[in-house]
Image (cartoon, rainbow, N blue to C red; front, side, top):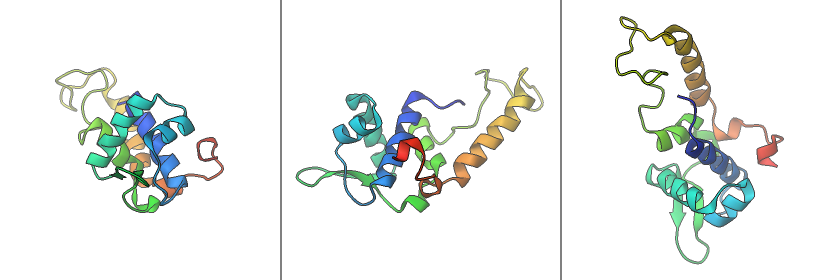
Amino acid sequence: MILSQASKYALRAAIHLAKNGEQPQLSRDIAAAIDVPGQYLAKILQDLARHGVLTSAKGRGGGFRLSGSAKDVELLTVVRAIEGQDFGEGCVLGLPECSPLDPCPLHEQWGAIRDSLLQMLEKTSLSDLSPSSRLLE
């Protein structure tokens, strides 16, 4: 359940857009600002728009921006837009049968880590992030 590269880029882009408020940003400008591959990020931004995290507009003055207020966008919403709604479920080792009744070797330890990670992602909105963090400069 560790974040994929796509989720990391999605979070970085969402943080960047939160910093820039209502001003629409072009995909290539976001990619340059957060130092990620442009074509890959364009697909990620489209996924975020398809899931309602972002809005996009074509043409002059177009680009991407958050669909709502940064305080209303939880980090978990961004991650699940990329990873799928079942993010956080399943076995950390990828075993098809892993449950409290038939646990994998890491089931108990990973459960605590997973729960903590999901709780942090759910309780943290884009507006909760420190403006002094390196990514928001």
